[in-house]
Image (cartoon, rainbow, N blue to C red; front, side):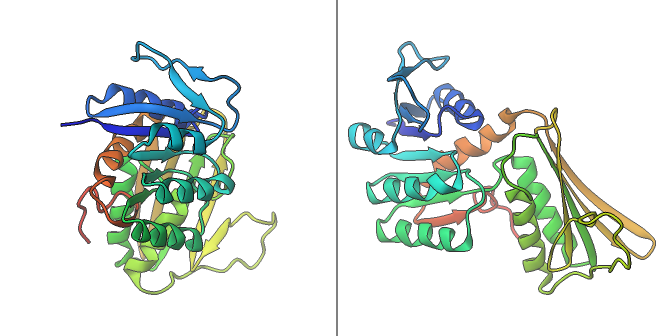
Length: 267
């Protein structure tokens, strides 16, 4: 069976570099080229490859010259939609881990994928343990009236709350079918102490050096609490999910948001 040709956009970032290594290490995949807006050279060395990988400062050149079957994007929201449009319109499937996309962005990606008969996988988190955490939180949401989310990330993370926290809240609300109960605070001595709120779910963001990514969902009821927590200690944890998405996206028609469907997790 021929290898799947893959290009990585945002290749010089932390997630991009880890993705390059994971693609090269998989015998079913072929790394064709890489792109990053900060690229100042024409090639880059990737461990495991005997020759250097072509590197461009724009995705257009990569697609026009190497015709990848799948583009993996780890950039920023301002650049991600341009990459999505470019990939799908030019015959490449899309795997995107860039967070901060709006509902309108996701709808546009779905529309483009259907129009050009391609697949797209967009996920706020590619760690399989995190996807199972969200799945368990969805289940618990049916039985508790009160819930809060605490997400913890490294101090270089650009957005807050995290895409995973927002995705978790959406999944919980969809499962519950109505807002959660949010206990009011008569006096907030320090503004913002209660965090943000999404339909009754308080969301708190922690940013510290030394962290990678963690999240805890806490449910409360009379005389009991239930905590569901996932910890990421290395970015390697995201790679199995990314590789799964790359291999599955070529068989998909339209947009799949999150890895739950790919992991065949039922309701």
